[in-house]
Figure 1 (cartoon, rainbow, N blue to C red):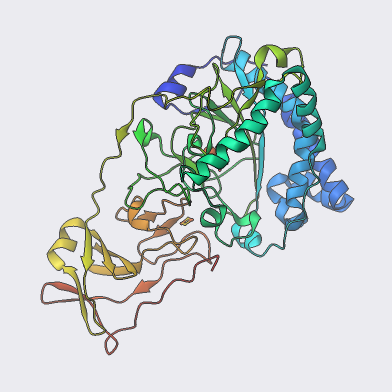
Figure 2: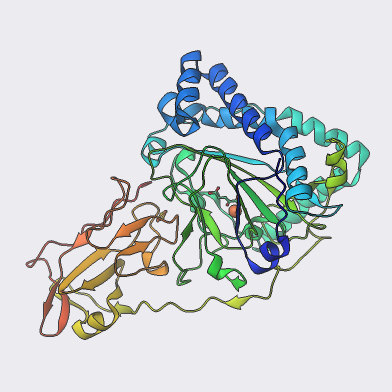
Length: 462
Ligand SMILES: O=C(O)CCC(=O)C(=O)O
Ligand code: FES
Ligand SMILES: [Fe+2]
């Protein structure tokens, strides 16, 4: 296996993003992951489903495997692969990234299967995966060896409860996910430390059967080192935080993406017609440190020296209140956006002036707030268009994302909407167009007796 040492400090401290074709243990890991997936598909569904997925790849899973069993499939593969993944993460840390002992591998492994949105949206209630006794027992044995684990379990519960009462923690999963079925959920743009992951680490993100720009992880490298404000209840960006064009990495099967998850990132809601199968492990080059005001903290880790000896019941614990940390680099404020914003007060039912034609001419795009209606006006050549600018996926305001002459990128989960017709790659997710006119140097929304009224976009989860 080719070894590839990388400049890990540039990833952790400068926000560099690396994509690796070769890394330690690659072929053995991918082979085992594929056969474990196929075995689980056969066990949970049928031999025929296995044969079909084997022939067409994991990206075809949604065609052959029912959505309500996906949570069980994820759990089964994770249980089967857990120790291989820990060991492999340690190999990557040592041989590929070039870290020195001791470095740490998070006990948390996330395996994610994302079905295409249109399939996921129709999915039934997921079958509950079995309770993970094996991990509990392992942690129990680890606690006998390291009594700090148990003491921390108890004290953490009390601590977090106290912080919820003090309003330091306001996370509400419902505000985050809305009513979308589990399989249709996607992570909004975020920084992992908001949730309680450690500072100064790597996200080791494996694209198991390839990802494309319509179902990948999305990154915002330009914002690395900036303080991004967020709403602690919904975990979405604070209103008015303008973010740049998302970087959507296209990854081949087996490619590995490395980035510091203190970089703003999120999930491109899967508007492709392929299943996306990815997994992440997290590595810290040194003792992990945390934001103790986060709703969860990933406090259980394996030391590289233990994993090298395959000692999976030796677990290190780093209580977030003792191991508090700071962002990897100094935080500058996010630069303000350039999209002009206009608020129209007292809009009446007749014709409404939205902005001056000169303003739209000059800027090319203007965001207009008209009471609850949020509009985006766009001018190209001699054509003026107006759209409802709340994203039809989860209602996020497109004015906070990148808008250029051709497209508006949702700051929620990355969908690119064409500004010629409001469409995206997904037939069910498009911006509603409104009719506006230019009259006497002003852009006017005709009232009831004029052109068609605003059609409110139906939210995908509403
Ligand atoms: O897999 C994704 O799309 C998002 C990944 C993510 O947020 C993470 O691994 O921290
Ligand atoms: S892509 Fe999800 S809210 Fe816009
Ligand atoms: Fe994340």
